[in-house]
Image (cartoon, rainbow, N blue to C red):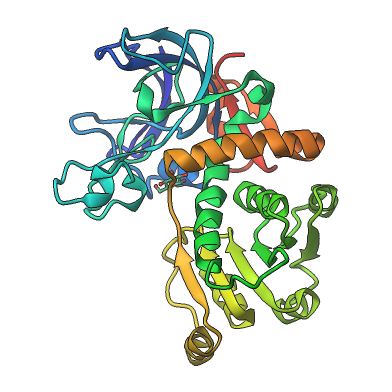
Length: 362
Ligand code: BGC
């Protein structure tokens, strides 16, 4: 079968022929892959900055945002049937007995760092025709969200982040209204995070550059958030417009912007990092103000990566809600679908748009 693979040692990537996987365990499920989303992590992997092939393999099949359809099930599979749609999770637990997070099925909080990730770290991914996976790593998806279900995995980042935000905000039991939220970045993670914050009743503002030919302001307004153009409004202007910022949801991966915004985080505010910046060298930050405010304003600053099965279930439910409320806005996050043979073009990052998707089958 065809697969998109990267060879880190040789610094090349190609559409290759890879053996079609077969069921080997009674709880295995075989999926025909339908859609695979491309994100910044994939672009880094094909630039050889990130990503590790499975032990003994010279290549890694990429792809971790996906949707598949069940074509075969093992005799002990109970939740999925042939024909069902499913989104697989990404991270698999480490084998370190003392890693209590992995032992509790919460490999998204792995302590040992020896977790693996499909399509990223020591496990082949989903940008291929067929995949075999254990049932417990598959999340059933209703057919009504078929065309946008590839957005479930990037939405899980917001689901996990906002679940933690809610835990933190339990310390403020007198709050009656949704938070005032600021989203940094108008890419897929930022826009899906903004939609989730709006669903949660937050007064949400997205701060982003607007690439030529895109109409992010119109898109963002159509799902009930505000938009501030980073080209024309400074961070100080932005903060003046938003008021006391209860939540910052960072989705740009640029440390300089994140730390420029941090001094404007409000009293009792929460700053959520989701971006993974490249190592571009030190940036100057106002460390005294940041530390002083963190203490004197009871602020919480945290980072979040990957997601649990619960966050996948929440994302599938919220994709359904968003599709019901804002069908055009949600669908417009998917800019274009490409055949697998042409994966190189969107992976090179030059095709533009919001989310590019490889459509392996329909
Ligand atoms: C993926 C996560 C993964 C992270 C780090 C992200 O692009 O969505 O599942 O944990 O990269 O590898």
